[in-house]
Image (cartoon, rainbow, N blue to C red; front, side, top):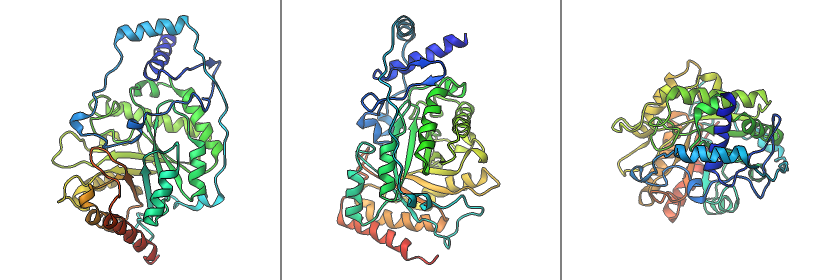
Length: 382
């Protein structure tokens, strides 16, 4: 039965990513070559809030006929993989000192809270050109650069090294789309996780990893309408355990939730998904200024309060995705910087791309507001 379950999990991988081919060689996992590595399509890599909730695709697992038919083909056929060990490039030594150590007390406005500015831009991780253009336009060099990674996709070492050369750390949002989290918790994907962990460890510099973000929303296959909270928790803990067993101690684990608006029953309080303080380094909160009347405190404040109640030990919080529509950007950017500082948070990651709204900075007024906010951080007393 255990062998059958592993074969089914293997077959599901082939169905969802037709380009992927897995080869078992004892307990070894062959690494993906640069020509056959699994990457998310452009429309998936853009990340959250790329389409209205009503337009987000329903999660649809392959039918039993296709699963069993594919399984038979998997058992009878031969899968071919071009395996090539990833070349690892080291980043600059200065990157090690970029981010603060885990605080023993809550950050306050007087200890460089809000000093981390990150960005997601279209085209990453294939290219760093968009990040360079963002820096040129705003005068702000991001300290975090975010990208979205499909399940079975390898760690993008080359992109991480490029970020390090620009003084930034990679923030990887790993999306287990159409993958059974119960299978992950049951160790059916351990070969992949060990391969990923080995690549991160070999890279040798800090990496921020988030697994299954926004699980308290209904729009992803790992969200609360599709996957039980206790299954998510088991999968999260197992992923962290595998990385620790492989010696990947350079990971900052970012447990990422969506803001929990009081009037939105589709989004749940994140408390049920909390894996425990020992399994979390930072907490990420995703939220967007959808309405002109929204401000930082009512948008993010309730979720921040929930996060602080989850652990007796203080938890550093990063606004891991945020944006505002073009017309509202100057005012909302000023409100964002003020809110980050008032709540003593680590900082934020600006979603600089179009989605269900145009979140990208594009007007002189918005860019000027962003620059003023960043300069205020630099000028703030220690």
